[in-house]
Length: 138
Image 1 (cartoon, rainbow, N blue to C red):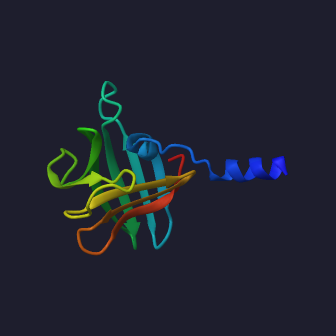
Image 2: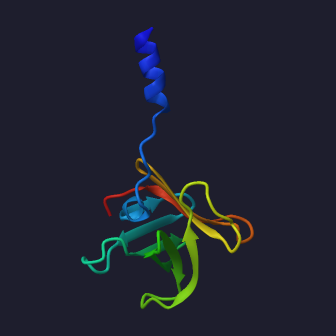
């Protein structure tokens, strides 16, 4: 009986979520309908919580590149879609953390579990999935 109770309690315990930079850092790949590779790294080692991302899509022989930024903002993080590699900002969204806050104006969701990553924008019209893939050695 004690073993069963301990197993039930352990099954309910959840590890705290990693901060967004730790969830994103590294290389990710998706091979659904073409190939996409997303790389995230800190542009400056003295600011490890700021990351820059680059997604390369290869479909039907064409390559498209998208750029992103993740930066601390107050007690949270801000996720930006960039116009170019130099960092011209197209649009930024607060990163959703926990279940608090409104979706008005859109929120970025960084869902990482084990070797899987799903990055989406919600609340700014229909959900836009920016990337869904697995950890990759790149």
